[in-house]
Image 1: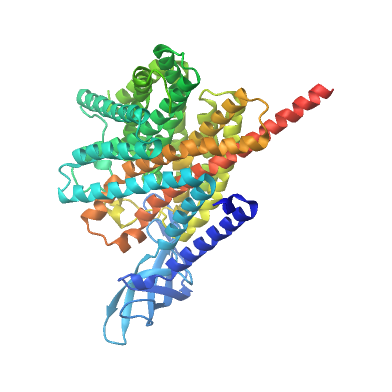
Image 2 (image 1 turned 90 degrees about the horizontal axis):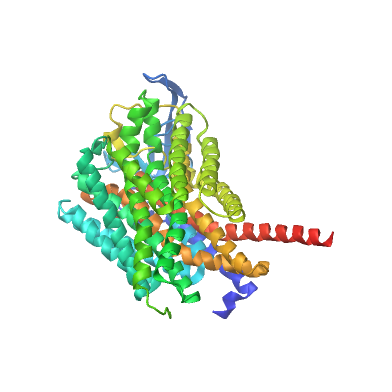
Length: 371
Length: 259
């Protein structure tokens, strides 16, 4: 291990990391054999002339037809040559332009043993995905070392739990979505805080704050829903919904605010513990005041983090609505209102966690902090 | 009154009760940020280049978020410069990756929502999706930069003569403390948003291969990964900007005393 701390050692780790990354990306570009769907690699492209298209709202676009020649990389038809056609537009909202070297999934129609026709389905995207995962893990380990590894471990563990919860939700036809993700939030929070803080009093106080803050936010939201009769909430505008939208929306909001509330309470409570360690003479009231002080500086930026995650995602669809002659207000209601409601509920949780964290820490912190 | 305005009012009251003037200011920043985001969408719809709009709006959002929350001058300035540098680096990373992954626009899962809408609108969707990915990480960049620079300025306050080299190490140490919890904010924030999509995948029985190459799935996962990269990069960059700022201050101070 000492070797990696020297200058030469550090240089070699970077070289090694870059080598591993190159190998991974090269590997995913040559992994067609593990797919069961036929994949075609484009070897030459004939591009047709562009045609001008104008829609009802005077939006002008150009569509181009391209003929792609290539060969199949895997499966029954491996090595066979194929020709497919593809139409792409200048804007490319639903289509894409292919180049020589592109790998695409195709649907093959076999007319006889030698005569094959096919249509392009979609492009293969695993290489950029693997590249980005490598970049994150690499940077994490090189810059943060052990803490980076722990952060990665907790994200991976939560990812696995998340997958199990989704499968469980599927097996109950989505009837129990709120209960499944509600109880899972408890597991998520416990596991994450245990990985970050270890099992001790500080972790218990942080856990209580996280769960309390998130639960209070949801209760507040349900009360507001009740008194305003959910006016201006467009559940039908939610995307990809395959089950009852209301409990699904609440489950999404619950998960979304959980991480931020956890982040915040960890920050506040660990600062308060550090403070008590340095100045053990501080009274509970003074601790509470410092907690409020720390909390009020970090709550704004945290709400912002969630706001941008929830609302920026609606950019392409909102823009399409505007381009299709819809008013600004209607575009907001149909695309962004649910994201804004989610950010507001999470915001309420984040703000409520500040006094909660300060109170719990000031009351239940051991008289003498040792750890 | 609509649900949004009541929830907004509740949030405002709570922020003022907990944070006083700083709370009210943060709430105002939130509203202004929403205005900027909406402005970005409208400008792109009016055929302005999505990337340039994002760069300008991104800088404004960072400035607004950082300077409107309480913090001393040095740490706010450092946080802003560092987050601006991260924003530019992020654009340099996101543009080629988005071109490579071809995840622009909408996928087959969106067809129901797209019914009756014309998609041939003459706006480059590769750039729109790039802009979306950049905008969604802005909050995280600002938060991380502020946390690091605030931590460092606290260290400087207690040990005003700390060596610059030690300060570099301190920055990474502060970063190590926040990285775990920040990653969880990102993970839960994004997964909370994508829950419906993931339920769709399992309900419609996509194969693993199909999911890993699906346009919408890859696009959403890339967004999380971009956000994580930007948070990681924020740690050394903020620390570096802080050491430059402190070095500059000390030089000036040395000049003043020698006069």
